[in-house]
Structures are given as C-alpha cells and as structure tokens.
Length: 368
Image 1 (cartoon, one colour):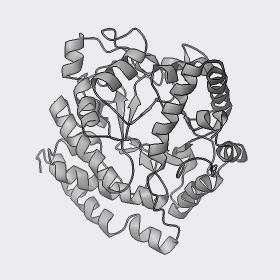
Image 2 (cartoon, helix red, strand yellow):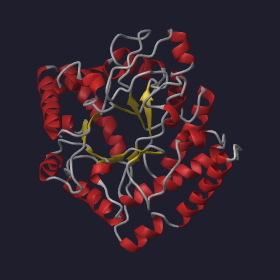
Image 3 (tube, one colour):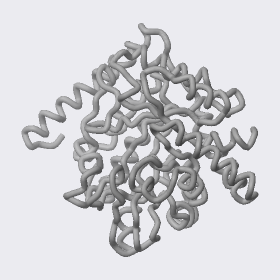
Image 4 (tube, one colour):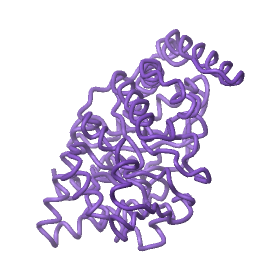
C-alpha cells in the first residue's frame, strides 16, 4: 500500500445526491477513502436503490485496500435515523433503555442490523454511550439509553451485541461523553465540567465497559473537558491516547466525529484539524459533506507523513485498525425478492409488533 493509500484509508467521507459521484468514485478507486457515510440526502424509500448505491461504493473501491469499504449510516432510532420505512423504525434509545431488558434490546438491534447488512451497510454509528445527565442538553436527550452509568452501560452494550450478531461493527459514541452539555457541537463548542473523579465515575464508565467488552469502534466528542485537557476530545492526545488506550485499554478503531462541525471547524482549517486529530489518536476521520475538504485533509496527512517518520508510523497504526473493520465479511442481498423478505420481513415485523406494544405501555405510563 502506498503512503497515499495508507492515509486515504483514514478518511471516511460523504457526498451529495442519491448516486455515487464520479469524483468520489475516483477517490475510492485510488484508495483515498475508506468508504462512505450515507445521509438522508443520499437515500430513498426504494430499498433496491439503496442497495444499488452501496453496491456502487463497493464496486468503486480500490482492490489494494483490505476487505470491503466501510459503508456507514447513523441509524440510532428516534430522531436520528437516515433510513425510513420499510426499514425497521426504532424508538429513541431512552425508550428502549427504560425497559431494562437487555435481551429485548439486543434482539431489536439484531433485527435492525440484519436489514442494514442486507442493504450493504457495514455499520450503524451506534450505540450512544452518553448519559443524559443535563436536562437542557440540546443534542443528546432521548438519544441516551438512560440517566445513570449503570443503565446506559447495560442497555448500550446489549444494543452493540445485537448489531454485531447481525454482522455489523458497532461504534459507540461520543467519547468521553456528550451527555452533560448545554451546547450542540454541530454549532458550538460544548464543555463538560467536573473533576476527574466525577468524569471517571460517570461519563467514562460506559466507554470503559465498552472497551473491556471489545467493542470494535468508538467515536469522539468535540467537547472540552477542563479537568482532562483544554482541547476538544477529538484533538486531545491526553483523552484519545493516554486515557482511552493506556488507561481504559481500548484496542479498536477510534473515529473522529465530523470534522466539519463548528465545535472544531472554528478552530483551524481542515488540513490542520486532520493532522491534529490523527496525532491525538484518531484512526479514521469523518468529513461528511465537502469532497474538497476531504481531498485537502488527505493531502495534509500525506505531507505530514512524508515529513515526519513518527507521523507515518502513526498513520500505519491507524490504517491497520481500520483494516480490521474492513475485514468483516459482507452479506449484501442484491435480489429484490430476497431483499424485501429481509427489509420489513418476518423478523422485523415481529420486533415491530413488540415495539408497538412497548409504545402502548409507555403511553399508559407502564413498563414492560
């Protein structure tokens, strides 16, 4: 693998439109992207069209890269779901967490994961490992499985097991915790206050448990934790390497949240952000919309790797972790008749019925 390919496997980008742009296809073919993340702008309710889009990403990918390209989507449930019906629609994580039923949550996630696998995805960026500890949090809220470390840990890891049973890789987010903020990192730079002992007892607890459980991937938060560092977590070596790798023992791939979000984009150009995030310990950089920004980030990584042998070694380490994610076996279903038997099929209908019963109980103020 060339240096350009090594650095390219550290970038996961997005694009506009419901078909793969030729520009993005060329970047995939050159090995300069690890795959793609799809949003609502990219998908329709036609499951065959979604399947064809993911197939085009696989077909365009460089043969020099290990395994299948990463094809990702944010399909948590509730208000964060890019794919609509007939894909299985999940309630917010808070409603699942309130059941305190790990087997049920695992079964729900496996049903969702089976549909996503059939459609050609390799991951849903889930579960949320944040704890809903701030009542005025504008971005987490009911995306969290609960309000305590114990509930979030149990329910989120059950969800991760379900995704992994279906063959996807789970990606817990947003390390080291976005639940106690008053600002949304899409638009501002949030801060989580509290001493280190409190952070370890509350925010870090689900991530520590996920690391012990061998979760495949985690995603960073663009949040400042003054008790740990004065930099946002995505750009902090203390948080991404010293604590996550050396203290918590995480061995999977660490993804940055989208580097186009204002919490970090306001700090520096994308070139510098990409280098700083990798030096901090991120292995795969999300740049979710701007293809030109993706190209600039790639060029910056190559330039720094050419200039500094230590950075080149860091890139090789990161690429090796991403290669583990890409090595997972894919089982996409291209035949329409078989696809519709899976997406919205018998397994999903059974889970949907259970979810409807759950919603009825919730409406009556009861628990399952």
